Length: 305
Image 1 (cartoon, rainbow, N blue to C red):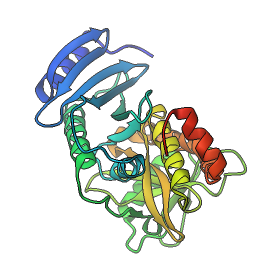
Image 2 (image 1 turned 90 degrees about the vertical axis):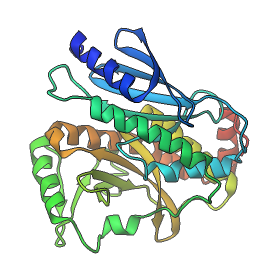
Image 3 (image 1 turned 90 degrees about the horizontal axis):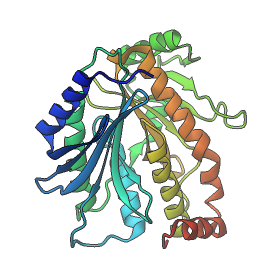
Image 4 (image 1 turned 60 degrees about the horizontal axis):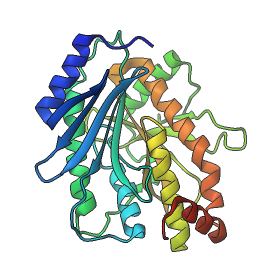
């Protein structure tokens, strides 16, 4: 991929300086920054291989310590509420909480990343606020509404169908008008994992897929599943793990924010991200419903369930 031009890098640096503090160059196409104003985050931005990525971790401070079961559930549920694809992820250390976001940005894109950078900085600050909140984690999203929405957005579904055709993704349009897109997953998962539009703020398109089955009832299994999903969140660009409500209770899914103005290429990125995320986790989530495997996985990650 062609690198961004020096002028584009100057645009990124200027946008970071506008929305963050202590911005410094850390190498070609790389910057470090801090977010203050109560957030106290140490962050990094990087343009590499056609992607602009941002990540931040909270500078340690004395605060109420949440048990893993509460902290990871709060992260999963907050992911569906944060703007512009901002997501909680797990870092390299045991239970290391980070925030991340990515956007495709090619050298020939006629796109100013400045507004996105500003929204991501705001999303990082909001994420810290949500994680530190003493309020109980809010209810998950209704996956039933995604699978069979009472009031489908015909305009958005028509837009999705047209871009699927351009991006050469197969899709099905139901009698209600809802469009569902089979993901690129192994044969044993094909037909079970389909992306569809989810409710979101005006002008924002969210593609969501529900992982089969309810969340495990055993606390250690639940923690293991959430650790797996939050770890995969950091690996897969654009995709974020979320909590949903399913007919059997609470469950999990994946979501990707898709901006229609990006055209079929951005839709292709979003669907590919969901496909990779499901290939990495859909079968593994089922394995971690077994407590023996869940305990082994958490021990390997250095996390006490």
